[in-house]
Image 1 (cartoon, rainbow, N blue to C red):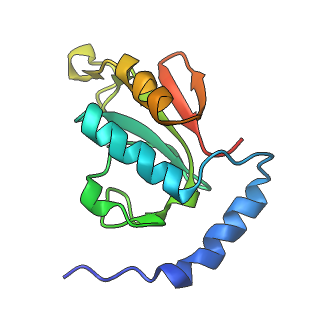
Image 2: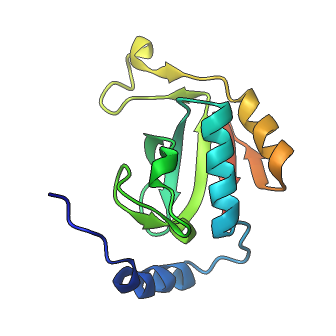
Length: 141
């Protein structure tokens, strides 16, 4: 049986990591993350993304199922449960290179990210950046 996450106990550490990171600007709220993730789930199913949490290395995962979206956090999802405010950025790559198979082109996942920009621009203002491999959505800079 999976142990319940005590978010109240985790929050001071999360806030400390965010302060220590020294970001100059914040672009996302909990409500904005929910709106964004729900719209992408509905419009661009099976989308893969590279997630960067504050104080962690980027990792590739799918978007969360809407059932995992709380008001302020993601539960029971991929790496671990986390607050929305822990998300530093999310990149939607044109190509995902599977760990350990980077040199095997046929093993890599290609995806059309053009609809991602359209969905995001239709629902609000977001801090977006075109990268060499895709589109990055920033929560902090």
